[in-house]
Length: 343
Image 1 (cartoon, rainbow, N blue to C red):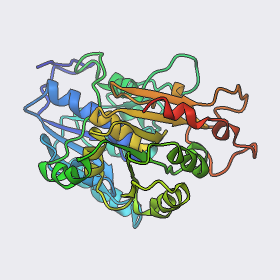
Image 2: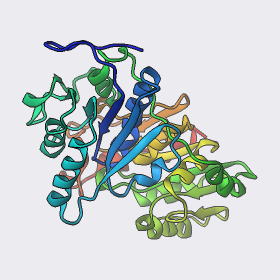
Image 3: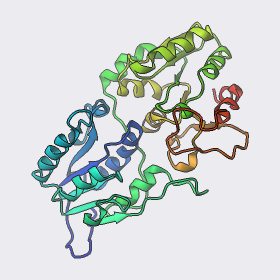
């Protein structure tokens, strides 16, 4: 087991570790790479994970998480934050690793009473961390993946190689989706929280229309994506397309995507599900670019993006609810043939 030494401290063995990532679904999935690495180096430690409410289904039956801490941000956010801080202070963590750069999680880290507190220097409370690490993101021409940025936080405690994210669907999860695996199939996750990160609906329709009618196609997403998936299937007329949006849990979706002939997704959370399962994936990038460091990590992965040189691309890290230039050419100029060649 590796022993870390910090300035002014003696070497320490970590018995209780807390990792914090209360951002979006994709960020939480990528954060599992840190869990993997810490478990490898400290297999006897009690490893806890703090996330926001809504994503706890990802970790049902997780093989080595001791406790999943849930922060409900929707109601009485700050009252619940105070309660979480009190409980964490009383839990006697040896190490807290904060993967976020925002004040609330910085406060949790600073007040945790952990002997070792690590986070990014951009966090407003980084002054109170035992160690802070620089966080670089943006279109710099030198792509650094988010898992690498996160790994930099714990490199002195483990090694300098980023692990891959990982999820652990149960036998029941695999059993539920086994009925969909009796024939060759692909999965499509057509939605995104951001309009400019979402391949246009009419493009998905054209894609389905070009597929072999005998190929089974499963459209995935949340309950909120159900209508979109229904419209795509209806307009395409593809006989063997089935809408599973809102019908599968996150882990069930991951179990299904693992064995797909190919998964077609946007630059969004389903892409990271594929990374965590090493599932084949074709990721469509509209307004964003892989230089931001959130690209697919699957062994078999492909990037599809416009071949047109657009000075307005990328227009933002997370995308927008509408195209700032009103033309959305970063998406509309992507040919359906660019997807078809990755079947």
